[in-house]
Image 1 (cartoon, rainbow, N blue to C red):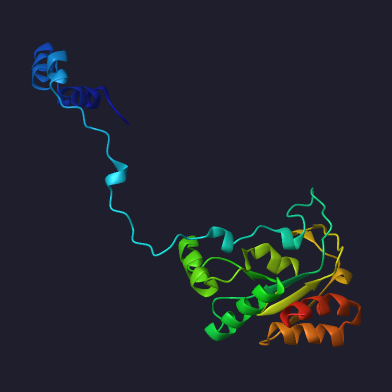
Image 2 (cartoon, one colour):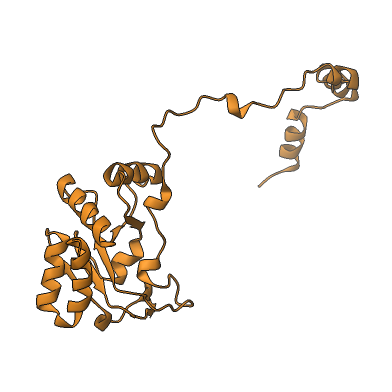
Length: 221
């Protein structure tokens, strides 16, 4: 129980602030006058153009890394688009051997196929762009970063090759938009693009014409 005596003792132990204490604190910590503020130099605007610039041999071309979702059709269920012409998608990973990646990029550039990555290198867009730029070099090839595409076509390993029929229409699905199973064929394995296309011709005769289109480009016909 708290008694009156306890309250009295607590009140006596509290410091008493007088008007003199307030005046002394005000003199010690006074506000600067307008004249004093006017004498304070105003910092100049920093010159951003004078900052050190990173040394780069050439500009990073983000367009070479991500071309959008044209090869996949509409990116959202609300925009249903028809695939114009057959599409060939090559799903890769930077964990693949460098010679295999270089071969994929070379054949994708010759056939008009699109290279797809699941995500960024170490979570960094800058590192991904630099790595893709070194890999692509001067070759003209579509290069996309699209984790949803891996889900859209149930890609679990790389490389995986997906051939989409001419005129295929995407439909709404959990991954945004998906193609019906009858509209595409896929194969996975450490093989070349031309081997995958020839496999499609043998294993999926209904896709023979689409596969032949890309084989003709690859062979320069």
